[in-house]
Length: 310
View 1 (cartoon, rainbow, N blue to C red):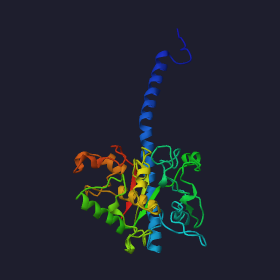
View 2: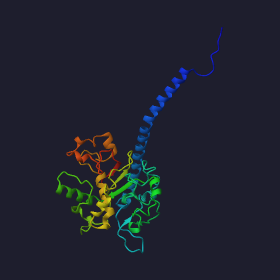
View 3: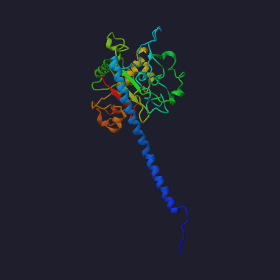
View 4: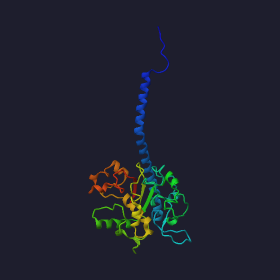
């Protein structure tokens, strides 16, 4: 006698299917974030290559990388204003690189250190056209007039800090005088670094040209860990002798920290990739264990960094 099998699944079959789905979901939940992180890192590295090419083209045509912080260039006919902040990566507009925003800034916008505040080097008015500039003494940085909601939701351009090698060399020389083989932790501006009141043309503000630069992405931890913003910004700014020099000093600080290689192994001390895939976060890689710590004092992974040396 033939008996027809009832339509549908048995309880055991349903349990097996549910178990399989649960296992697959677990695998996806573990592997997908890592896969997305790797994809974003690859995109950042690709963006850095494109931007480096654009910057090199600019350098070839102008014998300098584009200026950014701390330079004096008031609009025609205006009274000289000492602090002007150039449009962040405004050169990218001329070079067709408008779409290159930090892949890890979506949702957190211009805040690079997760302190819910827009600090001095974190706000760059990207959509200002032509050669327009924004004076920093106009109230943009008092924490009140900033459209903070918008700035924290939009993706931001990569942090770009150009520098003049003669000025960077002076910082290294002064560090060696105080502590041979040592480092500058970037907490305060050292009066021994003071250079901008010098009569030497190489040490003036603005410098005659910019011949090196760093690009910084927040990275998977979505935090630059003090590389861009000093842990105590007010104290750092207060340690700068002349307020006119604040932005160029902050840019030099960022460039110094982002390009630091204290153990001379060809790897950047604070780069996320060097720290997570190499040994730059290993205390054994340094003469002093404290050297491995990021500028904010943590032993985290750090931001993603690109350094173009002179």
